[in-house]
Image 1 (tube, rainbow, N blue to C red):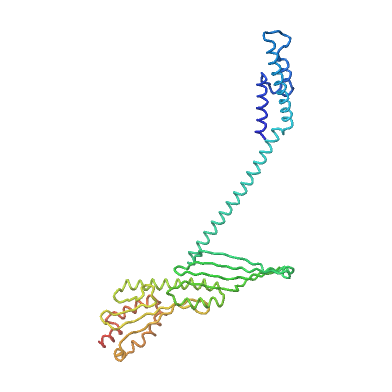
Image 2 (image 1 turned 60 degrees about the vertical axis):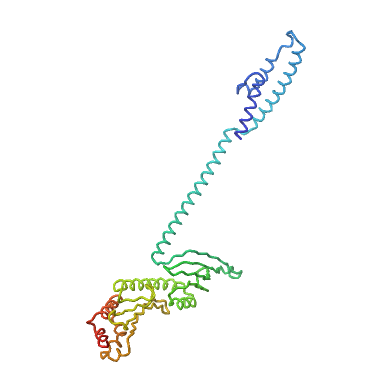
Length: 354
């Protein structure tokens, strides 16, 4: 609108200049421009040389002057009808304020969302560090199962389909499960109607049976809780075997590396005799994770016949007793020292055989 008014003003000023003078605003408003145009017209009664040519030129100038006067009058009417500049400026300012306020509200909302998202990410990272479980991908679909009869009774029935993938330390998994929610005026109930667990192949054979049991019970909480403790026990077993292998490199044998579930103990001075520690990690029906350690002996039959004190025969039972008293690490330490030192009763039995 402001551009249109400037264009009109320029045309008016230009018209005044073309006519021979520049009208002031006051003259423009009171119509004095027309009066000045009439006063400045040439005097037709005054004789001059070449009167015929001047007469023709003056007629042409009069025609141009009349055309300019008509255009000025039209422009004046257009200016009067145009909205006042103050009103237009106030409208523009009001529009600017509304836009600024809208932008400010959107910025504030966006800032709150970013802050909330950052808080959720921090909580998720904390839970990942606490539990060792990281969720990489997740999607959810919702289906409204509410029919007309339920709606009349203010009952809402919704089926949620969830799919996620993640890992718990070195074990990766994929889950697909459905949750049925039924809500009325007084309560809300949720139940898992289907659970499917896909585990990538691992060296942990104990997990397959546990996964089948979790799917059968549709117990999602048990799966995550038990998986976490299972992985922690596996990591502890790995670190323990690695520790004794580094401490007794000649006596301790790990056929499958530190991730093995078995550790062999050999006396370098007595070939043919070996103790094997079998360390399993079991998950019971309720999802409780428990370590189970057994001792196996590999000795020649002749050595068993010469074992008058039944040291070899009672070794597995004595091993379990020591586990209950000393714990895992102290028991393994004691067993290695007993088997590899000359003073132990087991070594004396081996020496008697040899």
